[in-house]
Length: 506
Image (tube, rainbow, N blue to C red):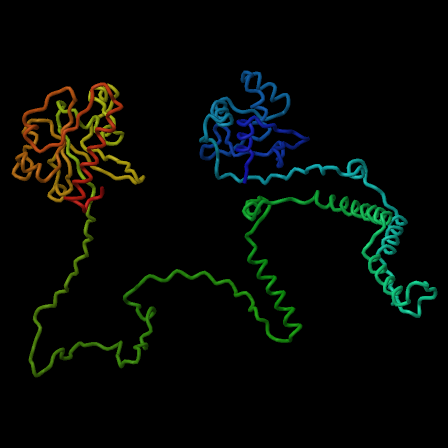
């Protein structure tokens, strides 16, 4: 359902005409009163404990028409016309929303009730003068005359059967049977033929009656209100639906009484049940007054003396002579410990050194945006270094995959090492100090896929040249070529995970 604020914004952006007729403001085929409240909150009324104040539709239209004026002049003109004023703190935000610069505003209260618009009456095209000038006065004599003329035209006289005896004058050339046949055909054809004069007279009489009926029905239709659906009706302020069930119950009771009188039988609809009383709060448990809470005689058919005691009786078989000297210990059941769900997020390790082209400063731009940014540029932009970053990778099918990026391996457990899929190397062997797999690069690269990022105009490090490492070359100045080079990283890594660690999410 359209609301006045959004419709005003649409008409203002599209430069459509907004009409004012009396105390109504018309948007095309619907209208609202001028003093109707929109759902745009005035400044200061959104605070807790204050009454909400909304701008009216007339206030917003006058504001749009007076944008070129200064605020003091606008306030004086609005006060002279007795129109509410848009407060100064709301001017910029409200104008940006109504002109289409922003799609929404924080001052719009989406929970406020919406008023139902009124359908605008359309003028009937080619309507007679009696509609536009004055209601035509039809006397009783005119109505009676039209009824008589219509009855005469519609009253078809019964045709008599044509026989040979009815024909008094005969032709010498035709036999009586032939003449009778011709007369019958002529009468049958005449029934389907209407004279031009008769048609004009009947149409004019019908037109007058149709005009009378249309004019009377027009007065009835003018008092009708059109609703767009049941949702609009339920949103009406004047409707209260709290007592709907009570009304339905009273209708059912009346119908049952009528059926009892007609049939003399008991009603099919039982009377409404009495309201259930509120349950009293149960008394607190007391071990000394247990009889109040339990039925002592209720033993489910077993012969049990609930008031008996085992004091002074033998608790074991006399033949066994068995005595219990120690109390039985109750077995405490340990609570079930829920297993921690298996983490299947892949882990990528990068060097913790400023000498590397790939660090925690620019790894997000490289892997997410497929664009290379130097560490110096990131530091100048105020980017803070983090110990751990979660990368969101958008795949070709539109799905998002998470990757965990770290530069410190000290906190990795044995289960976490199973999720390590990639490592960026930059040359020195001390990068792998403290790593598992015997700490050697050869053993590490047999378990984890290794990559090295370098400029295309630099030489290759000797250690990296001897290792099983995939090289990614980037240009110093051609940033448009970064996407193609970095995309190869994801292609190689996807193939590696699918072949070696398919249990991970990638």
